[in-house]
Length: 328
Figure (tube, rainbow, N blue to C red):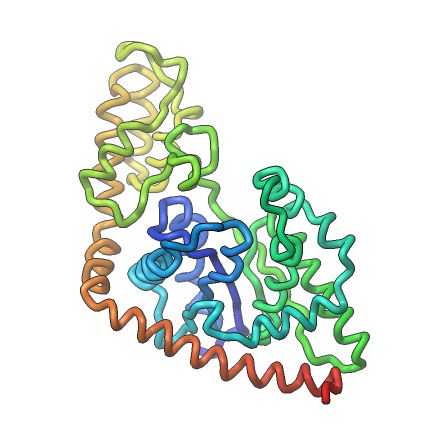
């Protein structure tokens, strides 16, 4: 079957992935392979804009690659690589920065949010993050970028940079990427309030053991109004129930919904059911991950081969870019 075009997506190396990553992004990565030629990048240079301690950077990169491959990303079809292993992206980033207005960068909502999060570490790389992201995308002649609604401004800004570059140098060298609006599932953390994430320690790693998963599920906040076992609950405000909708069968979900409202089912037993279903669902992934983890050289070879294939595309693009600019 012929593919619809080329997709690019990247993620920072945050180590072992959690349910939010898995349900929100990785499953989309896997599904897109059936329709598109996919380029998936672990963006280690981007990570430097917020990470000051790089002690775990290599291990986090390996763990993330392991999770991606175990989840179903197929390296024989898709290009999987590490951002810094394709140095052409840094060259293109520099050249694109020459056509990018500074004011636009500092007006982006994500920059303002990062300023609030790390007021003591406002570095040049953080300001120029969208330009490097644009370089990531256009370097590989990307047709489509899968994004959630929160990333839409960045992709539109990338399109503006491409138009500015092509206009200034009088050639249609770079491709304006199209947005593929993807329904990215927002997974709440164990607290039931904030988005699942490692920084808040409210996450469940998909590579956890069944025992570890069970312990984390037991920490999940349920209906705050249900104080005693015999009190009827409200599944509509319960994060455990929202997870049942993902990991349990329709019949189970319907039964849990009814039993919670009548207090026939307590929160502890409800959580135990969720943990069992979650572990059953993740069992094939965990088995594949253990198999791959026993072959670390294979994972390295996948990333090296991906970088080699990515560099071939990147260098061809850069030849066209240098010619358009008329660099001596």
